[in-house]
Length: 592
Image (cartoon, rainbow, N blue to C red):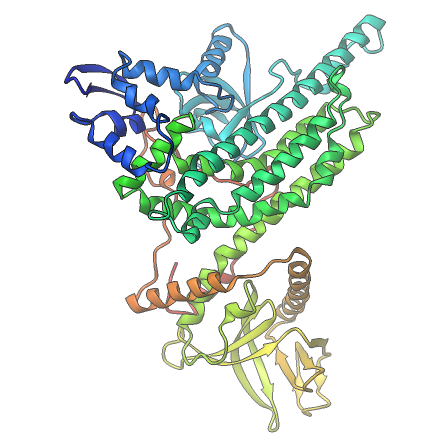
């Protein structure tokens, strides 16, 4: 963001102009420019001369000139509404052209001045004067929306439907040839965009690895390897995989006739490599927390800003750069969907593109699912900490997902005694608890059942042959290894059926985890239990904060700040909200 301020150079001369806020960290100081001195000391390990650009900031005649010089460097990637592109958009709108953008994420808003939409929606851009917020229109209305939530359509002159392209196909031969040529050009445009964004993305990853990570490793006094792993995750692994992917992609491009290029097979060959994004996306919240902590220390602020300037990167903070891989993995299905749209069924690439689209959607959904599962482990740890008289190993040693919960009657031997218990079905194990007689929201641990070597038998209503008691809505859990047996009864037939389906889902979940390699690390488990114990010590649960853009007051005109981006959300049906944690919250001391 650029703000208009007075800036004093080393000669004491004041100049007024617009400057990027990050750059002011370097130049908006009294002589002899103390922050620059700090920068030089912080970057002592960097060769001499590389800070010339920053040091000459107030000698070049204008800090604003330097700002423009930095932005005119060879950067092809930029904010979707930055620089010349933003000017071009406004010129198109002024000329009466229809400019369309495609939503990358859902934009959920409670503000009647903002435009809500879902990932995949097409928005008509009506005003792009502001860099951060655009004014647009969809079928349901008009309003402001964040420019970073969308990408411009590759083919702005795209017809409303395929019929328009085929108009006159049954008429003159020239008309059919022209329509086919137009569609070939549109496919070429999509292919060019895929290649262009991949090249820009590679440069972006290289800038992070060489501009930030390499310089951080030179400063062992400031960063430990564990700290760097927290901040940057496995982005170096992603960089290596993406380089191989881009090289393979370039080899499949038909330079003379781009619309004949076959890219689908390349995505299929590398789909397993994209799994590494899961680790990065899961780590990203921790990286943001660590960067937020370091941002409170001025030497880290100066250091990161110097790294950005030395690498000649655009004026975005480090956490903004680190968000790009998260955004990238959910963009592939959108690009492949657009490529498939302009690939005729008779094209040699059609089946591969179709299969690649399905594969990349599965990759993104798998990453979403893993992220959701890891977010649940804190809730599971908190729930366990609320249970009285807990015995045995922690839940998180084997489990990471609550499948189902409810009240059942447990019939025990030898007197066929009936006990009302609350049962909680997790992957790998079933926990049962007793309610407190006076405080019904307090639960006492009573035992667990191992689900890994268990058979579930549906019983008919009538007399049980083992316990010789009459039962209704009953089923039996039998362990083949130990011979242990549990007879459980539900109140209603439909409740029994829900439990039987839940047991089947539990086995499916375990099998899927084995196939995808999902597991909780020892560090994640310990951190979750530590957080739960701290929360238990405070006597009340930690409040779950809503995204800032859902809590800010209504604005009469332009929003004052950007909302948090909802990453990794494709144009797919939403998962129905689970009621399990709501049920648990009514039966345990903590509240959301």
